[in-house]
Every structure is written in C-alpha cells, then in structure tokens.
Image (tube, rainbow, N blue to C red; front, side, top):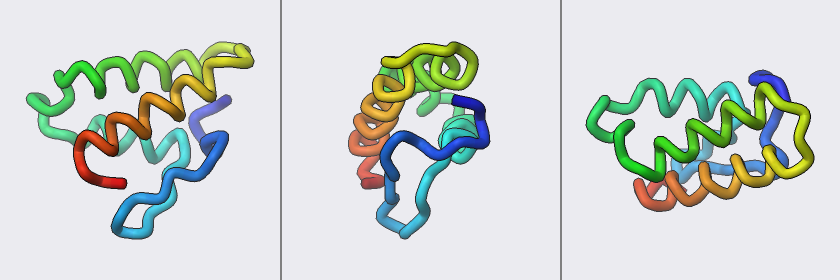
Length: 77
C-alpha cells in the first residue's frame, strides 16, 4: 500500500476532506509535536508505515482502524 494509495475505506473528515495514505501521513506530521506524542497517533503512525512499506494483508486494515480511532479522539470524524 504505497503512500499515494487510497485507504481501504474512505475516511471523511468533518470538513469534507477524504484522506489518502499520504494525506494521513502529512496530517500527522503537521500536528503539533505534543499531539503527535499521544499514544493513539504514535500507534497510527507505526501502522501506517507498516501498511505503506510491507506487503501484508492485515496492515492496511489495521492502519485504517487506528487512524480512524485517532481522528475520532481528536473530534475530526
């Protein structure tokens, strides 16, 4: 699942944006450092990296699920 691919299911933010894997990565990197350190973002980053760089059946779904949890924790979806 390269960085340019879409997520396995769309994640639509409250502002109407639909995230790709690259969008999610850019979004997380743009967060203030303090927020990036939140465990849910740390885990989302780990899983997104695995999904983008490894050929695994479960990695994309795991990354999507954790990214959604992190965005929900931030009130963005």
